[in-house]
Length: 120
Image (cartoon, rainbow, N blue to C red; front, side, top):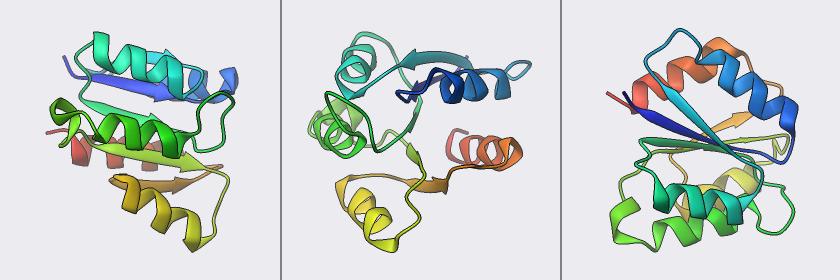
């Protein structure tokens, strides 16, 4: 069973992501910021990450950079979901190691399609 790590400081966004995968073959683990996400990503086998950018303690960009610095997570798909729609942010996230970008609010079906396309 593939495992998705949902990282967002908003409990309602994490819940929406978790509910989107009910009935699929994905297990969802949640983290409220980049620090908690790093801990969960290194202590669990994660197959894909869905992360926000703007979070307290450690931003999504910092989290992505820290995760990508670990050889075991080089090929891990990372989907950024953010209210930021400016190309500057998506380019910065891509440079940090993000695989895909989705602007909030997003359609659940769109998230499911992206995740299923990246985890085969």
